[in-house]
Image (tube, rainbow over all chains, first blue to last red; front, side):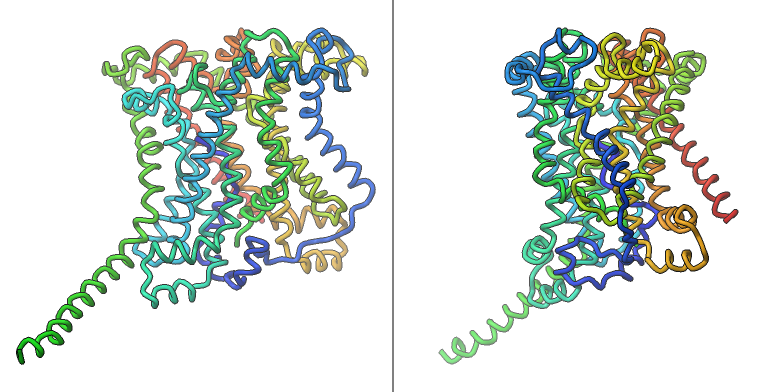
Amino acid sequence: MTTDSIPVPATEARPATARKTRKATPSSGRRRLFRHPGAGRQHHAGPVAYILLGFAALLSLFPLYWTMVAASTDNTRVTQTPPPFLPGPHLLDNLGKAWQDAALGKAMLNSLIVAGAIALSTVLFATLAGFAFAKLRFKGRNILLMLVIGTMMVPPQLGVVPLFMMMTELGWGQKLPAVIFPTLVSAVGVFFMRQYLSEALPDELVEAGRVDGAHSLRIFWSIVLPIARPPMAVLFMITFVHAWNDFFWPFIVLDMTNPTVPVALTQLSAGYVRDQSLIMAGALLGTLPLLALFVVFGRQIVGGIMQGAVKG
Amino acid sequence: MAISTSTPPDGASGIGAERQRRRTLLHRLDVRGAPYAFVAPFFVVFAAFSFYPLIYTSWISLHRVELSTLNLMEWVGFDNYTALWEDDRFWNALANTFTIGVLSTVPQLLMALGLAHLLNYQLRGSTFFRVAALTPYATSVGAAALVFTMLFERDFGMINWALSLIGVDNIDWENNKWAAQTAISSIVIWRWTGYNALLYLAAMQAIPRDRYEAAAIDGASRWQQFLKVTVPGIRSTIVFTIVLSTIGATQLFGEPLIFGQGPNGITGGADNQYQTLGLLLYEEGWKNYQMGRAATVAWAMFLLLILVFVVQRIVQRVLTRRT
């Protein structure tokens, strides 16, 4: 149930634009995902720019650093002024205690299952649909594509009441499928894959496959998938981040006996845990998996968000 | 014998033709049908879990349904709507959603624009700055709101401590209405500024260089270039981010909920001083057990969203006509 997903300017969704910029070869497409039409402006940054950027980076990172600091001290130290700025000795203790108090073990596993399943299915269905919209000819293609884009404007949160009733009826209340199923697909994902494939996948390859007598699924499997692998990886990571962080619907349909990480974290804020450094330890634990993902794949995720952003 | 030797080729060609026909039929079926099969999963899931619930919401909103007895629906007509219209909490939540929306969206997008401009310079360590800007986006609402709640703590929070250094008295961030709304907005701003900046940056990099050269020849200063070339050049992306953050703002839920720390969160503070429509929906449905009323709030949020889009379209049209 994520509305705030990967960027794709809806206004630039005219199919014609894709046709115009379809010159990129598969190899250049593979390297950069999408080709930018303009060269861009490249003034060298002066010291002021560096100072401002350093300040921005500080603002971005400081709350996370401070979470670590607070999680490594104890309650008495955190609640003193001036607040601590340097890590204390209790990090591992606190992480261990928070892990137990907020039942984070189960929450982590649940989040891993939920985010993994959602990301996998989103990538698969988005690539299938993206391929169809980019390279296959069928009646109503443009209208259906417009429909896909239109669905981005409808926040799924608005349907929570019937959705909750539906899940209760299905016996999925408090169970993971209730969180997974409504988010199996993503409109932005479809659009993202379509944009990529209409550029990076030459028509000739698809036609050659047809001449050889391959059916559509076979073409998808042997021709499309190998070419689509880089954007699929990016889409997987971005969807994973969103699914991991999704809050509203999981908070409604799950409970503390079977939570995802963000739901489990609310328990820390609800006053059951009085120890402030433990609360911070829990917040840190809940964020660590994604931070690790960012440390390793940050560049790719940044690239994916930027490359999905401009089209046309 | 003669017949049997002569028939096989005949039969084989018959079978061959049959197979050929079947193959072309299958092929045509494949070419015609596969595209629909490929896009079907998206539409099926969307219809079942987004579209149908949205429509059904309006039906539920005309009933009295309690959380404990979900299958008992009692028709009440527009009672829920009149009740909502006369409910001060609704107008309060609507106003709060609007003010928090403005407080979080406007600075967020302006700062993102500035940040994108800086990132668009040729930089050493540009990857570091980009990833750093995007890191808050990897933090879940849950964790971010917990951390900010502590930073905004009245007695020992870092922000009040920093303010005390410049002689500002402790601010009661939770109980003071505007202080609370500012604090909640700052969580939203922190999480989304870098993300929006990257969208702008991508759009900026697509602006052809010769437009800047032309502007420079015309004697435009850097600032004028920014206003006359950069901003118009990324206009559609700006519109897109406005739409996205507006949708996000109307749905705001997790930040105020966690900021309120527990039972206070659902009501948006002791005096509902930061209760948003999202929180009101949850309170009606899952605290007061009135699903019909919750559906009414959801439907009101939907209408609000449509209204916002209509206004946005009109503003956009007026602006484009002027230029």
